[in-house]
Amino acid sequence: MRASFVVFNRTVLMNMTKGNVMSKRWTEKEIRGLGVRTDLVTAGSILGISRPHAYELAKRDEFPAPILRLGRKYVVPVAGLLAVLGLENEPKATA
Image (cartoon, rainbow, N blue to C red; front, side, top):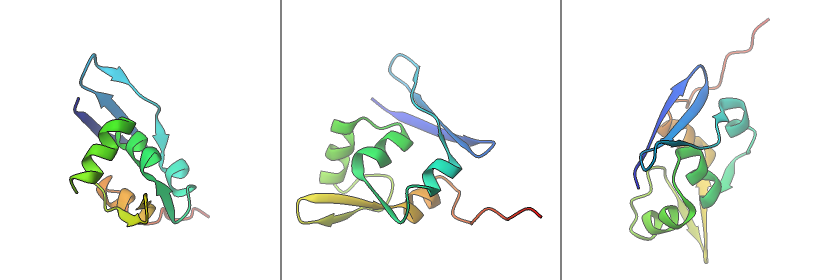
C-alpha cells in the first residue's frame, strides 16, 4: 500500500491508494503539539502509513522522515516530520 499526502490550508491530508480511503486528518497545530518527538506509529499515521508498514520501512531505513533507534524503540523527531511535510518554519504569530 502506498500513501500520499498533501498539505492544504495547514492540514495534512492523507490518501491511502488502496481503496482510496481517507485517514485521520492531522492539522499543523496537532503535529506541533506532539512536542519534540513522537513514536513511529503516530508519525506513520500523520504520513498515512500503516503501523506494520511503518515498522517495515524503519527496519529497512526507508521511513520518509528521520528516525532514531533508542534501544528497541523508534523515535521520530517532530522537526524532521514537519520538514518532510514542508512545514518546518514556525507559524508567525498574528497580532
